[in-house]
Amino acid sequence: MITPLVSVYIVTCNRSDLLKRCLSSIQQQTYQELDIIVVDDASTDETKSFMEGVIKKDKRITYYRNEENKGACYSRNIAILNAKGKYITGSDDDDYFLNTRVESFVDRCDLLKKYSFMYSSNLFL
Image 1 (tube, rainbow, N blue to C red):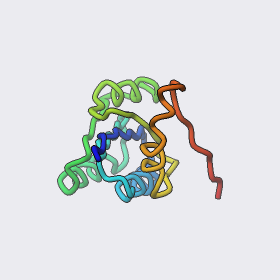
Image 2 (cartoon, rainbow, N blue to C red; image 1 turned 30 degrees about the vertical axis):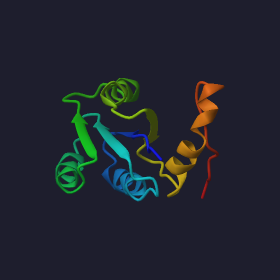
Image 3 (cartoon, rainbow, N blue to C red; image 1 turned 90 degrees about the vertical axis):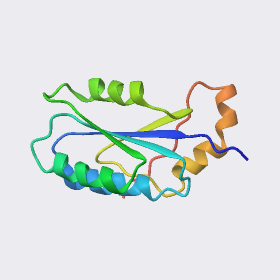
């Protein structure tokens, strides 16, 4: 069975603690063929140093940083333009994925023949 590459992006700005939780949830997916993209919208906290360490440990992760704050939409576009996967999904830094989220999407990718996008339920804790 061929497993397509899935790009997962995170847009962040000055919320390194939330980013750590979000990124960890993506790294721990049961589906491992991932292209993980983090776009930092000119954070002034520890985000840059954290990400510089993370990309040395996990080759699936690419880090982009805006030199000045451009906003979430601009940052999402950077991620989408640089995505390498057959499929793209994203997360804000204050969200996180259940460990089977990407696998569930890939298992149901045949729905994309009929629909232009897929959506999962939210779980509020």
